Image 1: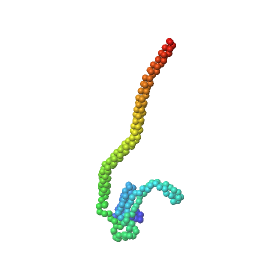
Image 2: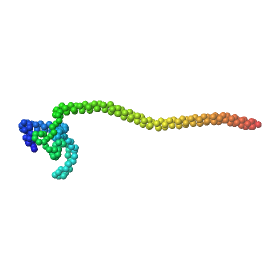
Image 3: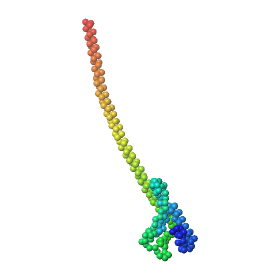
Length: 220
């Protein structure tokens, strides 16, 4: 069945071929525009139309067998509904008379785009509220992480500084010990030098006596 035959099939129900053609065009146009925009068009009992993105890939030319790179693209896809599948498989029979093969839409579902917009608006409000509630928790978690990093950095610095402090203290203690030892040695050496100095005049006196004796001997 082509488009013209489809129009003929529904012409009697829509009051003429012209009305049927306009209805078919309107339905197809609405479906195409929605799918191109990335929306999913679902008809209960019939199926759904949607846009599918295909990543870049390699394929083979069926004529030459050559490996060819295929660019990233988007394609339309139709998935038959369960009711449609059941009728095609034969598990369910087509209704007789003028009954519609596809299930009718439930009441309230054909109110137009207003209901869809309201539902989308409610979802958006709920998302914003959830984001606001989550914001303080995220800030608190970030603050905890920063504090933990600072504490870790302080501990690391303290660990690094401890050996240096110990080494400096050890150097000071060693230097103090050496200074004390030098002072003690100096104190011990000073009395010995004084005693030597005191003994020196005695030698001079002895020398004078010896000289006097020699002079007296010569006079005699």
